Image 1 (cartoon, rainbow, N blue to C red):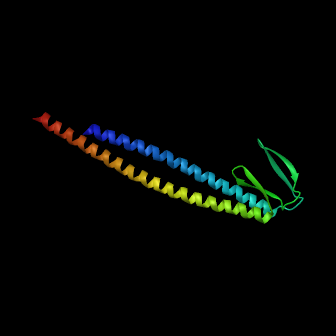
Image 2 (cartoon, rainbow, N blue to C red):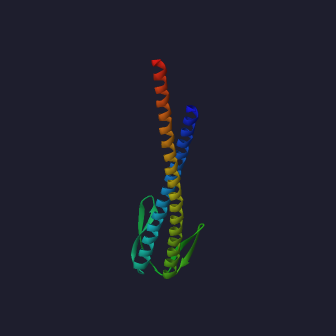
Image 3 (cartoon, rainbow, N blue to C red):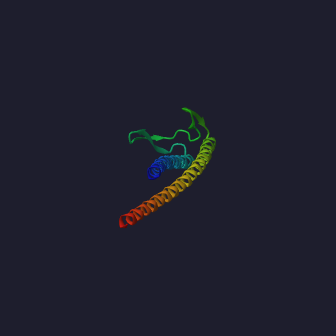
Length: 153
């Protein structure tokens, strides 16, 4: 009986570990979505506040930037996804970015629901593991008491 209990406890422990890894991955995913939202907020703010002939710093990569002058604020190139981009008027570009944010909101909501489900499952498994440990300890104490009584006789 004891060997089976230990095996079940070990299996629960492995399941908990797998769930914890999934939880960590989902939390990271949510953080990535939120960072993307922040980037979109920054882009919308820049589009709304920049004017034609404004000087901006354009990232080149590797932490390097170049100063450039905005020739026409009403010609914004926006990523549409799937490696496609399109030139948009200022208001249209903002609309595209807002739709991206709404899609990210939906993804965050879905991922948070999945995260809640996994956390509930994890809590249930932890309770099961604690109960099994308590039962095993009680059985061990009973066996020790029985051995002590048998030794007394």
